[in-house]
Length: 470
Image 1 (cartoon, rainbow, N blue to C red):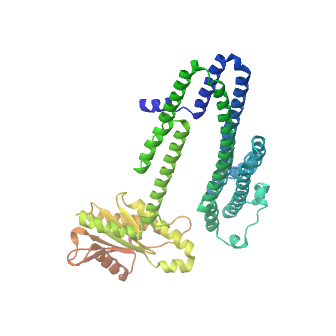
Image 2 (image 1 turned 45 degrees about the vertical axis):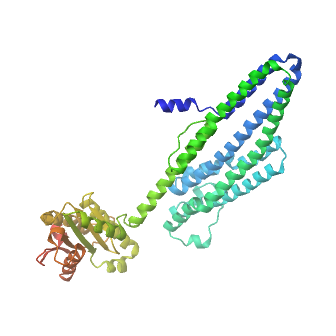
Image 3 (image 1 turned 180 degrees about the vertical axis):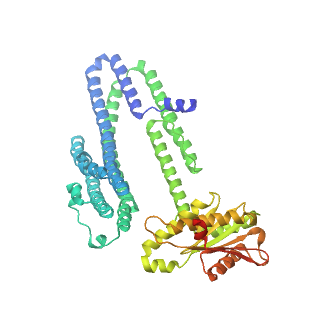
């Protein structure tokens, strides 16, 4: 905490340094009474340049903030479907007119065509993003089945492409999200920021030149004043120390941290601290994105269970390290008839119901997986053949839920084969033993479970759902 407070105390903005320079000008003008008029005029020029410099920084910050506000409203709507976000987007005329107004403000400071050209390009890019955002929000309205007449007029005037009208609501929702979260959209946003910053850099460089010219004029008038030479040298030395302490040294340490892929310390001038915060946020976002990709690589997209790849990795690893291990293989009986009779949407809902029933029946430490179309597996640690009755009760619980489904889903039954690590048949593995038990259950009429033992015997239990209901 103490180190953080000390860092905060050192977080002096560069603007403060400029104010110190102005203070030095005041001191010099006080001792140079004979040059009072010229000194005052030079000071006014410097002050005006400083004000314009600060104003331009404010313009750039406001432009980016307003553009981000529109993006946040649009993204908020396509993610949540909250009509208030659409209202805020369409009614935020300040954000929508920010670039146009900035063009007029900048003309008051400079007529440099490089500045105006960059802002004009940024305005065109922002208009293109607005078209994309309007279309994405209109597509979101279609996805959620909302009445378009209840939305702002700007959205009512957007016409969807025929191909998009033929998409399912889920596809429309996904496409709407992709418009505002894909690489092209982010690239355009970054391009807007880049062009705004370039225009501001050119403009502020010009103003900084004016500041330097005013400062040089002031110093030239004081050149002959030997009495102030020492004070001026001390001031310059102090300025160098401040710049080194607040800018160069923090940047050097941050470069080292970036090379070591470490988070940056927020130190130095406020602008440097801002860059450090931004970098840290990007690193956190990168970490989150990496974790998401890793999660998607090991989980089934429909049921959110472990997928086959993760199942094979876990089973191979646990077989080598765990002495008490049980594998359950299970599939949904006659699942093809469910798809044929009710359609694949209902079939998917049934698979989700099976997945939820398995999650509810087994422990958090048990690995529940979907390894095929209607095939599931459960890898249980710290469980051997002595857990047979417990496992049978869990399978009964699953069967019981599936025999009394909610939400109008069809009744389905399941078949399961169970193999224990301490009861492996010679020259086989857990999967083969469990698969053999499952095969015997399915040949015996399905809707049951079988337990595989080292003797080669398969102990069968049928009508799991009837037992569960009893």
